[in-house]
Length: 181
Length: 115
Image 1 (cartoon, rainbow over the protein chains, first blue to last red):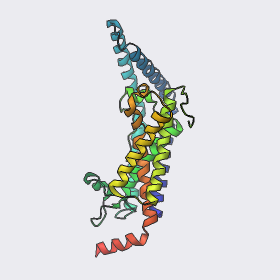
Image 2: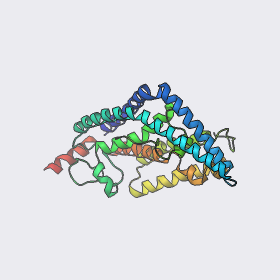
Image 3: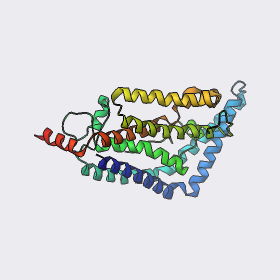
Image 4: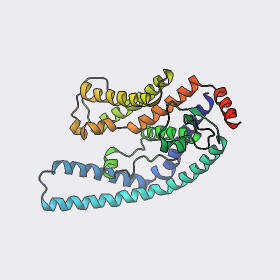
């Protein structure tokens, strides 16, 4: 029973590269993005350093300065996510279309056997459109989501597109990897 | 990387090593678990223990880094964990289904459930 699982793995590898490729073409290579990214990264590092050093002795006007810089960083971060938004939309639409095609191909088909029984709220995904009540049966969508989770971030990291740690730490999960369906 | 107590120029460099180690570990454990095969809650919890344990041993026993520098042991234990877990699940499922089930198994199951 290798065929379907391997096929799904390959599909998600291809879509991960495809997604990054599109984002690269639409966003990463643009001058605006690179400038903003550099700026945000520089500010994040500076802010982090300053926070570390002046934690114990924060003088009032220093605090104000810190706040002002944080404000500036926030604006830049927002701009950055706006730039990314356009391609996110395009990719989102393309992936939804692709997903519905694959969904209909694998409709009602058990693609794999799970070595465990998923907890109840995951069973809706892992047993989607499958007949019977053997919850170790795995649907296409469950395996695909898992593959995407495993592959996407690694691809981003490999290609150097992942946001640096300082940035993701500062901006919470804003740029964190959001697994696309 | 394999040198004990190596020095790291940048914080990120060490975190990257932890990250990639985790991914390799996840895939390797998935392979082993699938071949044995380990199943159910035993397989899952063993993965958590082994994965966190090896990484913990690596950074505290082998490299002896100052955890606080990286935001505590938790921060290091959690680095790249989700991705590694997903990778582990994928390989575990693929190997387990591939080695221990045939298409016939599922086909017969499907027809019997439709009857």
